[in-house]
Image 1 (cartoon, rainbow, N blue to C red):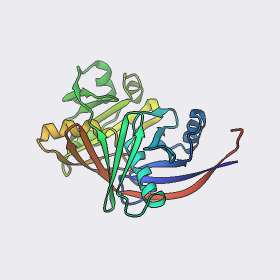
Image 2 (image 1 turned 90 degrees about the vertical axis):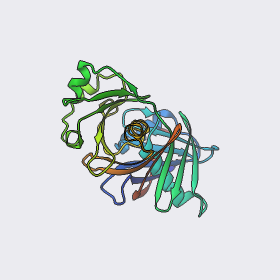
Image 3 (image 1 turned 90 degrees about the horizontal axis):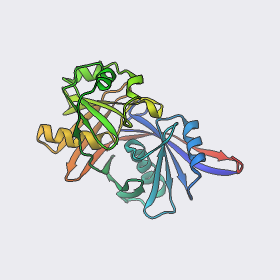
Image 4 (image 1 turned 180 degrees about the vertical axis):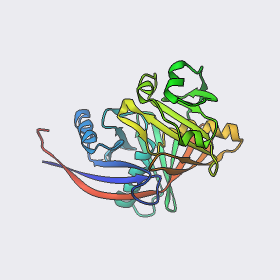
Length: 266
């Protein structure tokens, strides 16, 4: 019988029941892909992070209930919170992770944790019929990054009131669809949809902001931005463009600690 520590953390929120929940599994060696996928499916959260404590830098991988992801912001934020609280020396302020896309850094600043991720480059796209049918609202501009399409709408109300056609979103040649507009109280707002990963709407998506931050920094002519992802749970993000990197910061709230028991035959 193998025991695996598991934690659940609400990322980009000061309190539980908001932000984006992620599970964090602490490992002393990598499990098989099949077993990690099985655990993520059993957890049935948008992402489960697996952290290998015996690699340098610390290895991190992320799984949705359906598949492995190349990058996940909120589950990295959740992982950093657990490590800072439970596994690292008191006073340590930075963690470097080794991931599929290279080295990722997390930085603790008082009660907030910041992700230091590579910036994604928005490339303008033609607005196709599939995109129009996916969004169902007026699209001012359309871009694509490494993973997602980014549709810019008229205003915050359009983003909040959107009714996305999930079947059409699942037909896009991308991980998913981000919609965004300039905010009323924040610099920009967004929502994110990933039906192919069994996540119709992701509550707060750190990785999407690797694309959103460069776009809005250019439009608003400022490198320090306050953002809000206006899903049902919602979450606020503190953003900064630093050359080819972005800083994505927020609060975290721990929800539960536990243990997974895996039979050696599983």
